[in-house]
Length: 607
Image (cartoon, rainbow, N blue to C red; front, side, top):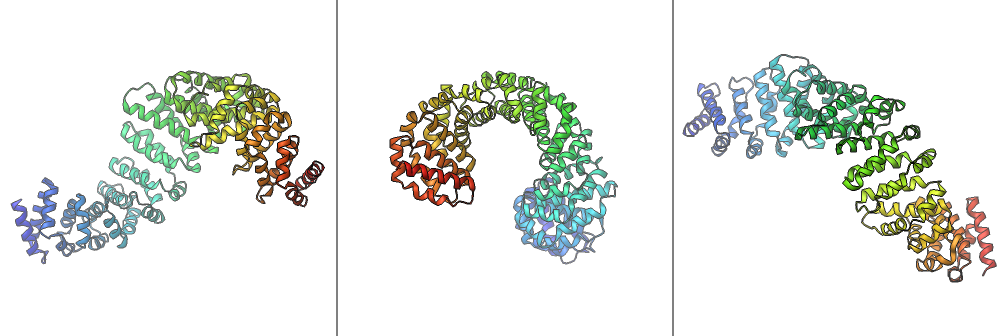
């Protein structure tokens, strides 16, 4: 360190005269000290006040300029030195050096700026103010076609500098996107894929930029999909594949890029990864299997990419994914079930899949997980069954296959995501299926559990779906037995609350179910109707100008239905319903105005 102190003192004296040979010697001594003990040497440089002297040594004409820039690059490897470099006024002269034609000057300047920007708000701000990123982007544009080793080294440094400049900073990333760096970097990747360091730098830059929505639109106009898939197919090392996966995942969120990736052959590559890693026990095999299968499922979220892979149910990819469901690997079972759920996004696909026996595979999978209890697999398989049950022609087939019985095995699940999908699957199955609605609606255990979940205030989705299923059981069965089971189970008050929901569809479903309860067993429901303030709720719905026409219509139907009960009739009289109803005779909706006339007559006749 004594030599270093001496060199720093000499440098302070000689800094005014850069031609002095002693400056070169001092810089060599500094670089040697930094190479040995970077942190200690950097602290010494700061303590002795040398940084503010360096701007004068950064002259474009001077022979010692590359070494000065190299010294700055080395000291800026330390986090504690970066703001000191900015305060010493090093950024403006470094930016000036970017206009140099000397390769070594550009290389060391790029390193210095890149290191100062690394994780440093002050460094980035100073480079931004001096317009450094624009100059570096222009350099990359003019140099990317040159494949000479020295040029590739410079490109690697410049890409790294832009990456450090914009990392985790949305506004600076947006700035680079607006400068048009994405198309240049994609072309660069295609030309320099043989250069590992430059390729890795490009991938990290893509990974940073791909998180931004605006970048995806720009990526979609390039041939990034082809380049990445081509690069992926060449890789043998786990780390390299992981790097490409990290770029593919955010890009594949864009539907246009999804299709480009499918057309570029990514799916075949992913299936290959799955085949190679499915029986592997190493951590990296397990990680790759998960990443590849997750990405596969993500590609199926795009309508066009999904349909292309489905190929009318004859696609080889679709067939391979089907074979994942009976697998012994939980990750593959999960991906297989999620893939089926994604393929089941239109009626044609759903009908084809049910006709070709997929339901049985899913039921067998669920049966394996009643005991094993892998929640994510349960959730995925139920999602697939729910989607498959949407087309009307599938419902009876799925009921005959025993779907409802298997789904009911999960009634004791304490996991809200599983509860939510279970409820949705049953609701889809019984839609328009009177017999099934009757069977499930008279299942005391099911109704009891639904009433319990109707109070799951911590899980709005589960609460909403429970109410909707309770209502659906009554609406689709139109059965007195079901109504009685719901009354005995304590479900009426929940349906009254549901009628006040902020979602019109739920309000309407509740009112229709309550109308059926009143029509089928008013005597048994009377006490619950009174306790839940049904009449008061109906008065509010009819008085509220925001209520939709169907809500007003069904509320009036329900008023007429409860008039046969003495206590409810008294409540109707005490709330002056006639005033509200008579106003609705002038309603613009003819069905509402006609029902208002009928309801008014009923109220007048029974007053």
